[in-house]
Image (tube, rainbow, N blue to C red; front, side, top):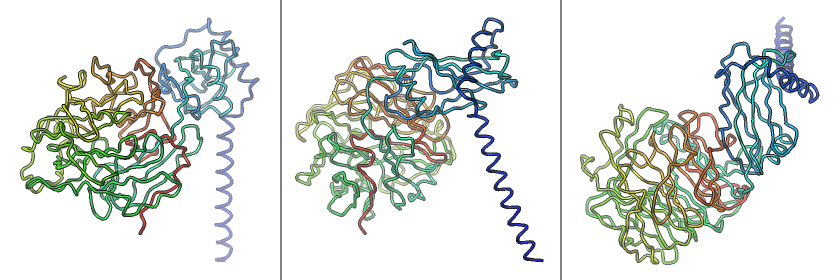
Length: 532
């Protein structure tokens, strides 16, 4: 009897499995079973019936791509999405129309999202380089009448400027309080935007904090802040190779810089390797305010209240202050190198040590108030300054016109590879993870700043230029509390386009942040680990 019951259970499980596979197959065929002749026929009926009925306005809206988007020529097929409020809508005809005489591409679906197959996507890209294509979505109640219930159209194109670089980025779980207690869940990934697979995970499972990273302009050196040997000031600079096994001699530590009076040990805030890989710059003798909130979207308020800029020279192993960025009456932070290493940008504000009850024992504050209230209570605004490097001799720091003295906080500056432009983050307060943060662009010598077109409604920051200087990578929270990675095209005049989402670089439950364009192939690094 027991044996019979067991066989019955096995039979039922197998039956349900086969039924599930059948239903899944039917569901898949339901979306993709229409042949090209049938779709062309439906499109013809729609065109013929267009004058007979007026589509209702506003019920259908293409939500991605954004109108005016410009895609890199090598990018893999995106997922098109739209919303439709009309309950009678059962089918949607997606049409790509071109201005070069090529016949339109039509796709029929019963879903409100669609990823064009690779061959179709290549046709779309090839025929939208000279002039933009028009993407239209038509909603239908049936496939026979050709009557359109509603429709929406946008313009989209493909650039002739190749990207060339790979993308190196970090994924962390949220909120921050969770991430800080489970560093092993954080992962670093290296991906190619032309790939239809997921970016490779090259580092994960580590139990310590690691954050800011960079690759030298020639692609030969990799640097990252990494808590090595329980030293929060540690940072490594190591050659790029397939299997990176980090050893003690790959690391230096900002903690070697002498402590000033009673302040905490140096950690080397926002440490940044120079383009050649020889130098690194960071804040030393720094003190930071840090609050953690139980809010998935904005779970941390963090900014330095004290600090000066120092330079690490890998040739001599020394760490020296940078004259002109070493005034202890200010907090100086977030250094950024010019491509020729002749200049540095950094952000500066009056010191805010009064926010700490005891600077000898600065600890993270756990807050029940949200970031908006905390910004009101602990407001800080940074200006961008430019200073000559002079091989470490420094010079006179001057405010960058357009990114200083504007009643806003200006931070995270990044030079374009040709040295002509600076893109920076601007918000009403703070230096990181601000809801109202936006990307602005200004001439590198100063001038009129301009808000970039790529900005979305919530949080735009953590940006990086491609080696060609024609693409900019950044993160945004426009689609929810977890940051996603986008890119935008930037022309010679500094004008950019609505962004393109790198959907394969974003995973549910993880925030994708600090993305960097790196001038290496996506398989140049396979793993990064510490030698035990």
